[in-house]
Length: 145
Image (cartoon, rainbow, N blue to C red):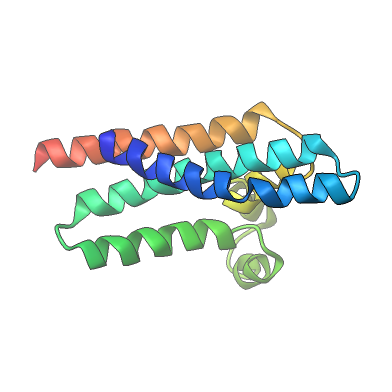
């Protein structure tokens, strides 16, 4: 949990460093503050979900490079799910109902409401579930080892 919180704090700091850009845009124009705030919140929640997934990859192997590559590929796959090219690729393999259910698992599909200024509980719960589920599963993996 400590490693997860430290990494999440690091990512939150990286997001915090970008706040002067938002303040500059606010000074020069009239942006929708709700969209900016919800975008930052969604980014922070998405980062936590990716960290939860990466913690599973880290728990599965003792090699840091393999853990990084595995975690990166898992998160990248979740980002790809829901894009049109990916949907066309799997479109010939599965029925439309299955494709729609798979699309609901994509990170971008769940991050999109935040980019529009909407704070929806379903995507927030999705990100929190991925983060906590990843932490829980990695704890189980480490304890069994």
